[in-house]
Amino acid sequence: MRLLERARKEWFMVGIVVAIGAAKLQPSVGVNGGPLKPEITVSYIAVATIFFNSGLSLKTEELTSALVHLKLHLFIQIFTLAFFPATIWLFLQLLSVTPINEWLLKGLQTVGCMPPPVSSAVILTKAVGGNEAAAIFNSAFGSFLGIIVTPLLLLLFLGSSSSVPFTAIFSQLFMTVVVPLIIGQIIRRYIKDWLERKKPPFSAVSSSVLLMIIYTTFCDTFSNPHIDLDKFSLVLILFIRIPMLKIVFAGHEHLSLISVPLLIYHPAQILLGSVLVPTIKSWMVSRQKGVKLTRPTV
Image (tube, rainbow, N blue to C red):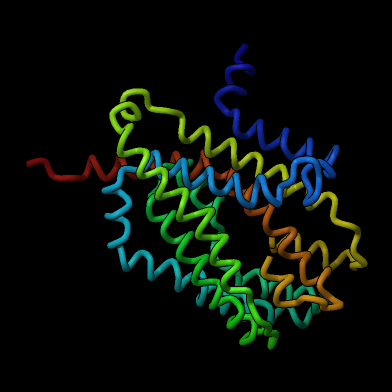
């Protein structure tokens, strides 16, 4: 009975295990072109659902107040699109003297130049009780900024350049991020009293969508054909934990090797982020209690 209660309480962690297990047993179901059609259900519907859900759950004043936190936004964007790529480059200079495959190193640098994640960043921030409004703004803004900055970073660090379909990527981000968020906010204005009275399980909805993303991500990982790669390079990449790759390196003979770090990083990022949710949430609660206790009473 205690085990069942524990499983209900930790349903998200159980869901992660089930999602990965299901992906391992039958990865063809969740790959692009498979029965689940993740190129539509995940890339468009799931992402749009996350931001529509956020639009419904967030108060308008919280969103507008998040926009004025310029120092926070500046820090996040500089850290993601400047400090992190430069740090990865320095780290890879050290790894370049090891036997690790040079194209894997280029793949690591490519991962380091990518903009912040859109859906998982918002869901995980919401799950730990963080500033969801700030996460939404920086995820969306960082993705739009990445359309321009990421190719420039790849040109700087790798010398690879190509024409990026700016309009197509911008349109997809706008339709799956901005539009659902605005629609959610508009609907919230008319059913605000009902939402505050019934308190729908917004967090559970977002977590369920994330489970779907985890499932399809691992389906892609498990269905990826074996790559001719020495064990040392693969183990080292795993230790490091790491649609723009195909644009920048379109037709490149080493695209499969360059893609390995991204294929490993994406599921690892979602999995480790999900596993760390309870720990970070407890830390945040304890910090908030500490701040309240130290505030002077008037």
